[in-house]
Length: 68
Image 1 (cartoon, one colour):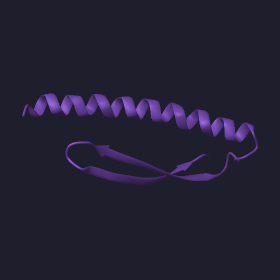
Image 2 (spheres, one colour):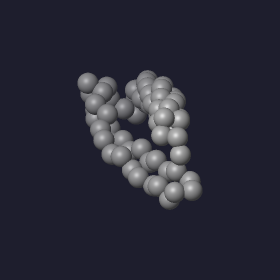
Image 3 (spheres, helix red, strand yellow):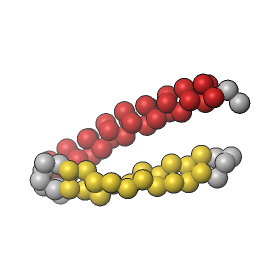
Image 4 (cartoon, rainbow, N blue to C red):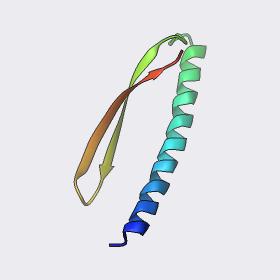
């Protein structure tokens, strides 16, 4: 195994996930506020599940998104 290649591959994947996740969350939050389904002062629970096939990795990370 090439540790450097694996590290770079992981970083590329996480950067893609991070950027696209942020855009999707921002879009959904703005729409919910515009539609009156959400107040701009709320905090939202958030979870991200990471699965990697072939090694049976399945881990969930929990957190909170504060809008104000």
